[in-house]
Length: 86
Image (tube, rainbow, N blue to C red; front, side, top):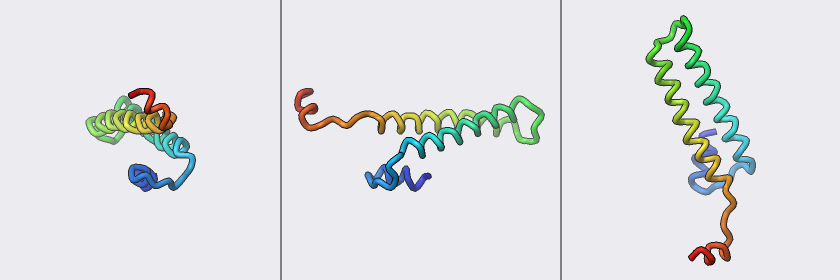
């Protein structure tokens, strides 16, 4: 998945349905966030500080990937539309 995002930043199209890949990645982040919340508030063998850090890290990744999804969902302006704005 990360190779797809790297290629996307270089404007190389590897896969046509980028929303599917981004959605799957965001689902993974959400499940990791739920797991860290569960581990923080239950008697788990994991360090509480580590699970709290993971929780907030997953929030930042969800925000970044959500921004990527929103930015790529916007329709691209045609040349005529960009001249009208100027």
